[in-house]
Length: 253
Image (cartoon, rainbow, N blue to C red; front, side, top):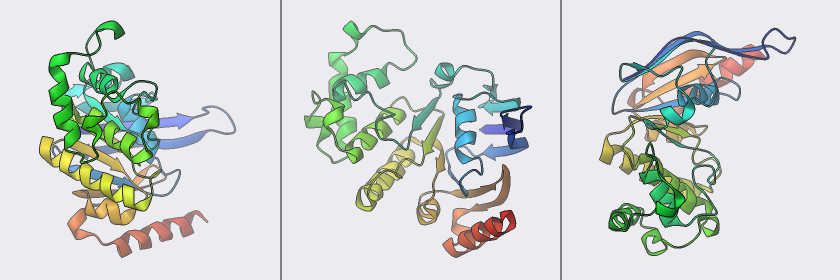
């Protein structure tokens, strides 16, 4: 479904501060499955998502999504096929716009439109239906500006918007890291329901190993741009992940 082939990426090339993140990196992501990417800071997790999403360019190698090489496509072109939810609850929404306007923007992804003709009234009932699944009452606040919502409400809205067009791939970039534990648990459950409902192939970055196991089908641990563990989530324990994580930290030290 998603194939990453011979991917290489360095920063600050040809300087004393050159950092090599990936060198001929390969990974295959299974269709209709949720793959959790874990690892210590600097292991390449966020860089990998940024390379897939197109916010940074690859040095060499290929990113193939559903048999189409997207490694040279601009970010806005990839966004037609890829949904993304960020760590910051405000990054996936437009805080100055209303919930209705945000939903309308997401609904028009990949289309040409003007802000004057942004909202289609015949789509409002569909937006309310999608929002009602969150059980947060947002369907009754369509004209509320998003800046007045809580972090959890914003992230829930981001999640609905990212999945609205049933993307080929959903990228979750530590999307509960900025939330309190109770809200995080709610968002993770909503994430699971959404992925299952629309059968969306998902890559999820997480620092929470318990969540990574509970809410994914597969665990991939990175260390310095290499895969050090690749298992089905049901076959791995939190203790095993912590031991491998600590062992790699000791090697670096």
